[in-house]
Amino acid sequence: MNRPRIITFDCYGTLIDWNAGISQALIAEGERQGFHTDREIILDVYHDAEMRVQSGHYRTYREILELLEKEISTQLGWEVSASPGYLADSLPSWQPFVDSNRSLERLGAMGFELGILSNIDDELLAGTRRHFTVDFDLLVTAQQLRSYKPATRHFEYALEMYEEDQAAILHIAQSYFHDIHPAVCMGINTVWVNRLSETVTDDCPLPTVEVADLNRAVDWVEQRFGSDTG
Image (cartoon, rainbow, N blue to C red):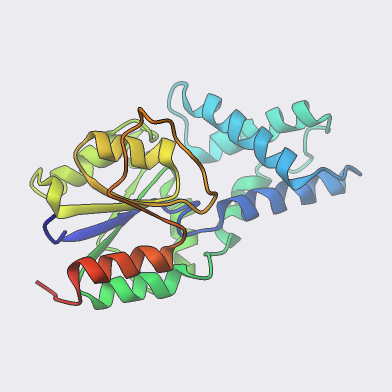
């Protein structure tokens, strides 16, 4: 395996604590209406609904979040929010995992370019980027491409930027479904940050390596490539 030029990340769920942000915003909305709903129930309803909504024709992620607010309210027996758009409005405040910035700084110090390939809108990602302590060399959003992962357009675009050289890219992500599977199928090396201890069936393509958190992902990169800046 050659040393990559750029290490790309999914943002939400990998660098940003997506589930904490989602659940906190939805629990707060439920409590405003007098409902006390379990976090895991909220997350199950959210992720199931998100997959369905994203699979249709392209909408901005802000629009998707507003549709999800309505669908989640219906499924949980809530009223439609008096403040539609509360999920998108809360998103820029969602926090990085404790290992995110230190991991990004370590990779930058090793001489790697850094990138984000995200299912998000430009303005929402701009709000999130204030939480990071590094700059990124490549930012690819669903809004730019009018496409959502696991469709392959994010990875195709990254390859276009790096001369169609799969070995130039190492992709790090938490979601097997949205990121690891399509990247592996395109010949891109991957690190699966399996924060949720998920399993996949034997017939699914395997990542280059699977780790429990970003610290271990960076440890693996350092052991494999050292601190040589190439």
